[in-house]
Length: 371
Image (cartoon, rainbow, N blue to C red; front, side, top):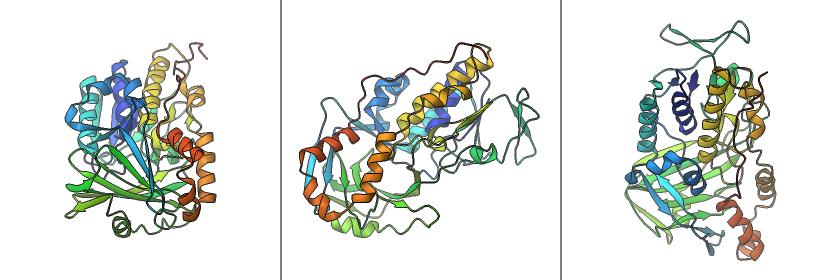
């Protein structure tokens, strides 16, 4: 089995497949999993509750944040909390390095500097042939595309590709004046059209970011993080220059129409498994990547049908959050949200968006009936 992409989804899938007894090769074009990150690394409590190995994360890689402060464009704000709920800020670089070791310990082979350029096979009962730049040709009975929003696997195998994006920039600062127990989120139609600005005290650094919608077929547009910092200086004040800068495209259109074909699946950002409302995708990346690994193992070991036939029906469609995103884009007005923020309906919507604890999720079990 070949997994392409060493992000959260790819590493979780490779580890789980290896634990299930498969021989797994993970291909990653970068020199390290944490290089050139495009993620804030925020993990929701739902993930911690449902993915057992997250409870073994070294404590110095995460920090709990218990609430959200949501700011109107005029900087009036509401503080939001849910009993027992929290977010994990992570040291995303070291967290992914830790996941690499988990995957290798489970038996997966992780290859960095290995660019996926395409795959082909003679028939559905034949293995995939994956040529590498060094002249080697890998053979794999199954391919999982976990290679991000601009997936080469999706393009090579004729699967759907993301078309709707946010463009985001985030700076990390060693020191900043900020209230530490909150994720601070800022509405501003000029600085962050279609999305928000944010700031929070992470693991050994304060993360400050800004994102905006991208019109399909157009360039992403400019983000003025300096103007954002000037506006929010009374709530977040970084000191010194950034330790690091992250920037990238975030898919926000929800689940893509075609994410599988016989012998191949997309997971994570490649499949559009990112909330259109919050742009959060780590929980879905981990959960459905592990579900894909279990389904593929059952299929290759002769115990179930190809998960390409049934697993995508279990992927979240994000219908309600797509509708919310569309409503927000159509109504985003500083004047309106200055007045709406303190109202009970706005507060309830915000609590649903940020504290989306669910009353039970459908299990991702393989279809036991053989094809």
